[in-house]
Length: 193
Length: 193
Image (cartoon, rainbow over all chains, first blue to last red; front, side, top):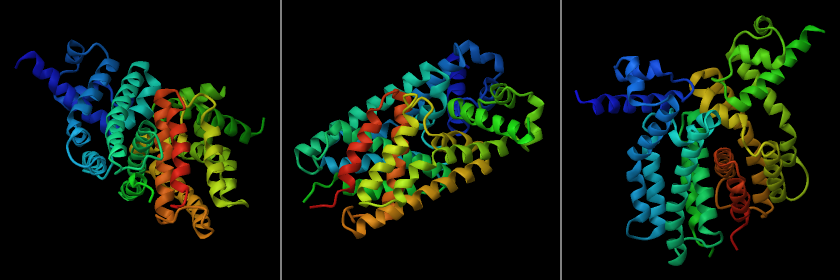
């Protein structure tokens, strides 16, 4: 088995373990056990658990990247914003929101433990904000989206509202909070008559 | 020193430690060290770390209870909703959002580790939702608040949006996300003209 394959196994299994149980609660021994590889092999592939955490978060982001396609696609911008959040929802609702969003989890749990993890999470949030703001700007230009707020402010607000809904869904094990998000999204995006 | 005083010391110091560093990362030894009491005394006062976590969360909630007063106070409901979120903000901005909201932290981090902690967090979120929905209902009745959404849905949405803003502020160490919340709150509450 080529060397990179063991690395990929550790990355995929460790990413999913951290997503479910948290960064602090997932030790190197558990990560390698989940990957089915010897514990010692971890440090052949990753400098530290912190470095691993950064790669695991990037890998999680990569897995969900298709959900961002609507933001730069064709068609009415307001519809594309809604399609984006519908796609993001599909990524987290499979287990009834039990694991939540790994980015949101890192922001709360891993960030305070490591500046590198906090910086990585902040950078991904910033990418997300720019991508969403771009689509909101298009919608304000074509008047399908309310121009009451600057697109950057609205993007920051909507991403936070989404993350908070996933956080609540995680604790409720129900989609009530995410349903409230989707319902409210419509009224926020609609231009004032 | 009376017995309950040691208990109170452990509760206050442990609550603050868990608030800053997370539930999983705060061991009993660290909690008792922070309280300046012998490690063995912990189990004289608390059945388990899980039971301690529930009491610590309740204690955190108690400390912040004044922020809920505007919701049942006198005056225009829309102003009171804004006063509530201004007061809640004051509770978390002191350290530039580094610790965040302990309820939000528990939802993400402690909940997956313990059903008791998850249930406690869900119950506090539910209390918060009811209190905010009551004030929103008054504002819809006096037409100072938009009636585009049921008060329960709007309450659930706004609490999520607030929690997500605090989560983002925690990672950014900046108030940009909470400022976006306050700016957007005004446009959401305002009745459609």
